[in-house]
Length: 358
Image (cartoon, rainbow, N blue to C red; front, side, top):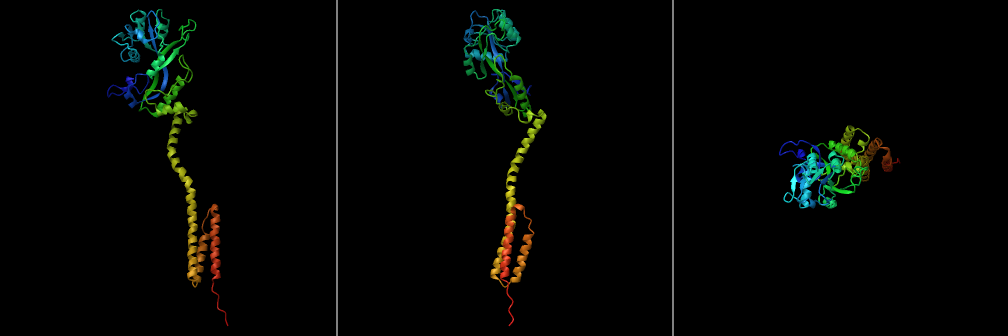
């Protein structure tokens, strides 16, 4: 985790890392994102006490290997021991790790030791078979998981390690930190998506402690979820990535993003363009209706200007005949033509008659 943070103002040593649950700090949320919880990291507490124990309070006054300073094992061990009121004031906490702690436990130099490792790790396999070494059963596993959200209760089922030798001889309750895949927030979103997709392919398989598709998980992460990874966990890969190579699918996704505002603009344009065009056609016809109305008023007010009115109606008729009209507006167009003819007939009826000779 320290490599993701960087020391002081120094450049971080890593941009992507698996992070053990419980080792993050509140300020990490400012510049880190989670791609999901990926797998369990079981906490194994092996001891050599005469009787079986199922509570950490039994380790008070004992020599306990809690892992080296700065390790995830030590971080988890001290939190759980502290919650059970076991500390350096009433027990001997030894900074020993891995094989050294296992050897010290077998040799009787330690009474108990904490380990965080996968069940198929060589050290865990050896300790489960070591004479005189017992695995602690966490009878309060569910309570620990409720108190510490980054922990989960898991069960090591009877015989699951070795069917032939029935290891373990009974179901054992354990607690496990849940590892998450973390990235710095400056990692490109395309890479975040590729990592989330690859992690899902690797970690969705069933294991000793979980069934198929139990991981990855987007809920309960200690860091803010990457929006890209969260979308992937909820909906799977985008449409293009199901059928196209990754690089081409990313390019197509970007193209779609660019086209969205264009389409947003064009949809209303295409919707209102026919209405606007229709209005312009009707306006062109209304103009000649206005001319006809003016002519009728002139005919009523100055019937003696018959020749002038005839010239005007002929001008209107010629202009109307030359108007280009789409087929869907033919009805309005021929209505105008019929009105022009109506005014022509009225004008003909007003034609002055020549005086008869006596």
